[in-house]
Length: 213
View 1: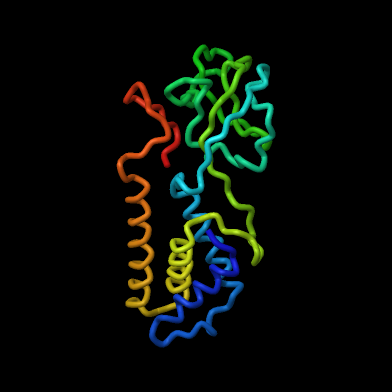
View 2 (view 1 turned 60 degrees about the vertical axis):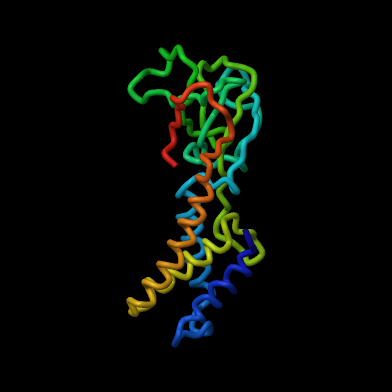
């Protein structure tokens, strides 16, 4: 994680390391666009441990939504990885699309078009608390002093790779920057999966993970 201004400088420096290239040839507005595209791609790629949260919210007991306003935390139902109800060991499943919601007789959730709470818990009169693992997307476009909430080295390498792929005809250069990015991405993904880390110990191996991260 770093400020946009720092990432811009680092992208320029990385591009400038290539033989025959100068940092002066790379326009800052174009780099900003590539940084934002790189962030959007990496954000949706997976639920990164460093940029995911688990929070507890209270259900209102009548509409299936939370008492809390989630507008600034969860901007899309696709940014939710798990929802646990009270002290259940397994996360709630997503309601089946081919079944009327009024006939639901099991605890589950469904996406809902509401910026304050983009999901509903069924049955609607469920009360108590839920625990949600989610990611929060940055507000784009960035300004220079904004923090980019993503692995700094990874976003620098991806932005530089995208710049070269779109602006250079040198295939060797494209392969070099692609390799730099892919190597770091694989390193981070191995760290994320190391020892099969989990936030919870489940009583069953049949864990309902509704979102394919």
